[in-house]
Image (cartoon, rainbow over all chains, first blue to last red; front, side, top):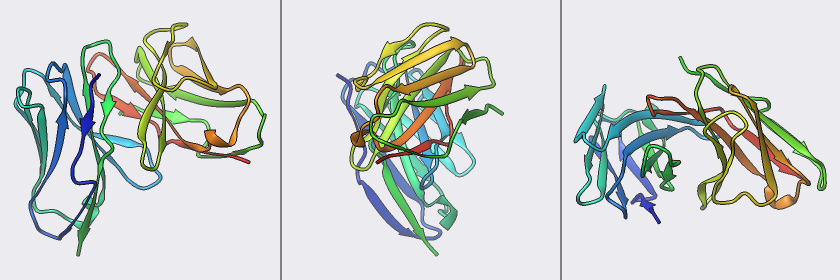
Length: 112
Length: 111
């Protein structure tokens, strides 16, 4: 059964710092991987989707990479801002017809 | 922009009541999902649907049922609400582009 782990559970950084959030999964035969952001008390917002054939995706200050063979993905946030403070969740899909399996998230605080 | 809406942001119900949570998406997506989110447990899948009138159990279907009579609407039903069903409920939809979109969530309190 696929399991997704995100370490650390919480992270606090000063504004302006570049940072990396980690995601690992136990079954490397994934279909795609998605990163989400969740603000307190709100729903999830999709940030990036990486297909299994891709190595990375970029959107603005965000860059997500995927290493299927090692079962890992990273979300790189450049020049962090207080508005980036949120919980970031990673999720993988094993095949086209299966639901996403979520990690428990990393709670990020960016201090001004 | 994809829009997923949920009928209520906050709901308070009494133990034993039948509770309906409604979710509507406006992008003609085939796939829809219901999750609950609890501190320390993360997101857990309750039910999902890949087409109208079709449903599949997720990881924690006990105490819940669903209905999908129309493509755009996916309803979650708590047959007899219990206090351990107090939670944040999140609906999502997904189309052929495979990005999953979430609604704003319903925070349900069962007294």
